[in-house]
Length: 238
Image 1 (cartoon, rainbow, N blue to C red):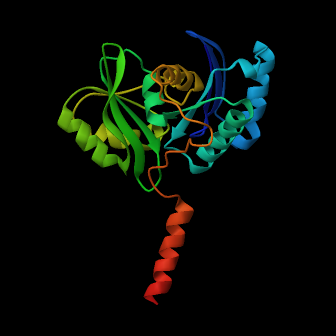
Image 2 (image 1 turned 45 degrees about the vertical axis):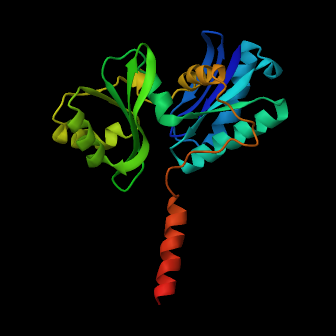
Image 3 (image 1 turned 180 degrees about the horizontal axis):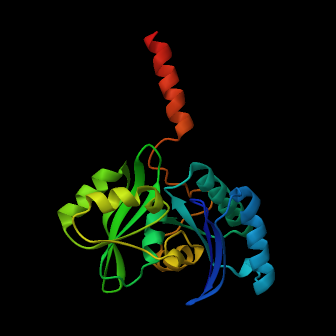
């Protein structure tokens, strides 16, 4: 089985190829370029280096969100295009699920946090039970202090990871009552290999869609949409 994985939900652009239980290739870049500039050239390089025949891919897995609105749209458009062209199913993997899967086998609570601006994060809570990733709090956009309060109520050690860590690390250290740990650099950001690996599990469960049907998971409206609504509301009040 071959799974092609994509993640463009944040600053990281990442492409991976998984064959059975082996990550054949992974190409990730966390730099100041838009995903529209990087994603397809990265895929092209992976295809060349591994001599991959895209027609032999069984399914395409994508980090479906939450995350950067622009990044999600670029990634989803790319995956939809390949899915339609190759007639392959698409596996929508929630971003926080894939991030948490980086820490497979941990005996602690896992808390991915993605910077959602305005003092908010996209977050969820997970733990592993019998080597299976279990979601104990679904993905949500919320104030960083609210998720910390929820974790404090649980009272267990927690590992934080994601691009929200450098933004909110001082807040976490100040407000956490239980011990807070932070994932090391090589595990702390989105990786297409995790998307592909988790995608394979979903695929074997029959949890996939056609390229036509798959949609991003935004969780909240974009800043442009919010500003437009605020502007329309002020006009109506006038």
